[in-house]
Length: 244
Image (cartoon, rainbow, N blue to C red; front, side, top):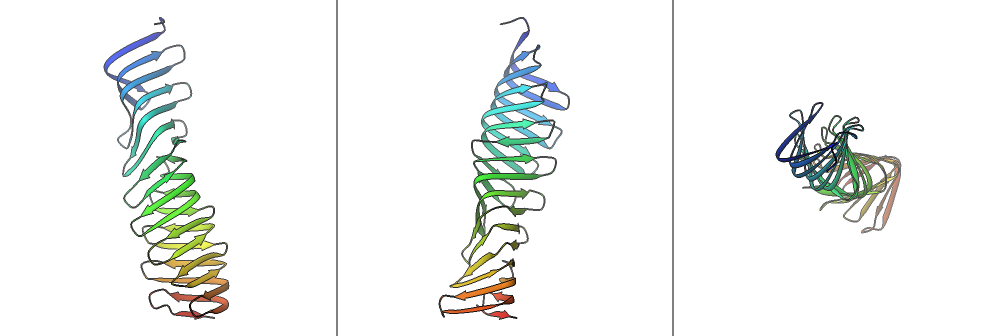
């Protein structure tokens, strides 16, 4: 080994500013202020952020940690698992790019790539996004999610599917803890042959009703009728609707 490289073996503990790193063995490159860590890698920042993996390359200059294989990031009740995670300590941002899964008390979210900020508790998911909730499944291509409010922000074509109904929306928010949605851009609610469309929709899954506002249209494929108006209240439990 080069004289500027330190070799550490057995229960290694390192510190960089407020970040502690643990591993089975490590190589410290003094010239580049970087570290390679091997086996049972663990990073700890305060008492709220823990990152685990099989391998770590840490660039001390850029304050960038690159963890590979069996990676897990835990931030309070949020857990992110992936095979490749980069964690930027300057921006306090972890991001993955080879598929990942995030779980909290309410939901399981998966996507091809995404990012999570332990500071803001906000996550952004991209490509092949799926949010699994005990009551419904949301699929999309781009989704923002707050682990604090449990609110998903829809940013592109998305489907929300449950035993009761199907919802299509391209923009809006779904609060998964309240089970309420506020949807824009001609969103659609389909329930037992009835298709409700409006410039904006409000839906309350627990109460079992939906409201549509402006340029409202309801197509009833069973009774072959169509109603239009500027407002509709739809009770999905009784199938009744009120237009005006």
